Amino acid sequence: MADSWKHWEGRTVDRFLLQRYLGGSDHSSVFLTARAGPEPQPAAIKLIQASTANWESQVSWWRQIEQYRHPHLIRLFENGRCQLDGNELFYCVMEFAEENLAEILRERPLTPIETQDMLRPILDALAYIHRRGFVHGHIKPSNVLAVGDQVKLSVDRACPAGESGRVLGLPGIYGSTEVATGECFSPALDVLSLGSMLVEALTQQSPQWKEERGDPVLPKTLPAPFVEIARNCLRRDPKDRWTVAQIMARLDQLAAARRKQSPIRTLLAKPAFLLPTFAAAVLLLATIIVPRLLNLYRENQDRRVESAPAPSSPAQGPSLPPDVTNTAMIHSSPASPGGHLVEGTVAEQPMPVVPESAQNTIHGTIRVRLRLGVDASGNVTTARFISYGASRYFARLALGAAEQWKFTPLQIDGHDAPSEWIVVFEFSKTEITAHSTPLHS
View 1 (cartoon, helix red, strand yellow):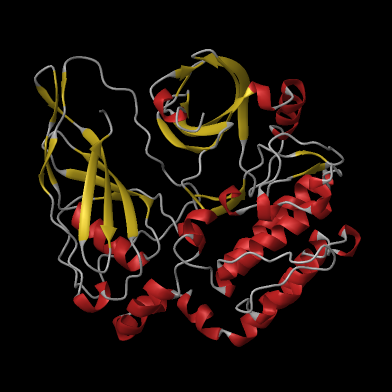
View 2 (cartoon, one colour; view 1 turned 120 degrees about the vertical axis):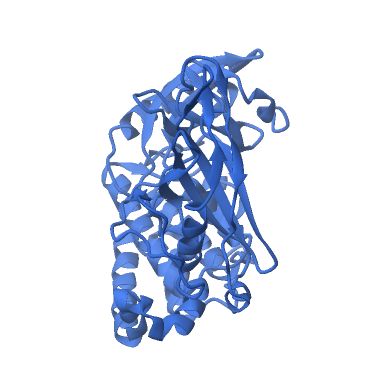
């Protein structure tokens, strides 16, 4: 099945269009879709082969989870059963997340500070579902997601504590001997999986279970503050593992110590760090230290372009809007307007001007996504952040450039009309590129 999922792009499951294949396995897949409403809302739809699961139990669990309301759990919206090309499937529609921890770990490990910032919301979410008699059962990097500036945990595979023989069992290093031998799923299993993920997040390596008895061997590169947490999560005997509450208490101690030892983070959190006096230092920090897990800093604030802005110095870039919301806008296409439509095109696309010294600080690729409103004359009238990636500095440069773009107008029945565009800027150490997509296509 893994090779055939993608061929279903463009098909419809009930009323949900499978817009883009996002990934999957032999028994399940995830597609981008949209929920109906005045403005279609982006969502993810997961398809699972009906032969691999107990349909009635799975739907019962989903319906319970749909009632959960927690800021660090992915929302579940709807579910059902369907058939595609003779394949019996059931599906779950859920909140769409643009990124996950596994994608980050393919590039680099997390820093200790990033790890602390990631762990706390995940622990809060786990405590929430444990209090309701459920366990996650599948904690791993690909299930730690970012929605806007929120870290969230997927929950579509959660099940009641005490279940055994769970469908789609745990993969390799995140499983445990008790699951392999048919023991029940429990909060202690979630702690074990969390410990494995913690080690991988910090070292890009997994703990090694080399003996039939005893605890695993941890990578020597695991930072000292987390060795104690990892060891107590990875005890072979479930009764010896820390609880979620104990892990949270230890994290609180680490956070308190961090606040005492790292006053520079307090300084960087203040507007003063944008002053020209600090420009050189901030330029380095903005691309190395300030970036947080999964592009957590995002902006979704309208920026009105009432007149051409004054040129900004490359060292500082145009200023960002002062307010930040918690909702990231995702690539979603509103309904096409009626009448004969001729798409506009990009006529002029000035690129961000980046000092060589700044570009040399980039590690990997920084992606900045913007949604542009264009009037009937082809001028940009609004520029809205979808996400500004790992650096506010480069986001400001991208915004300043995008405001200067020019378009040939969209035409409806021969008349010029306003339009909207998604523009993605990509910054790397060697090049700067831009990609644009009209929202009505």
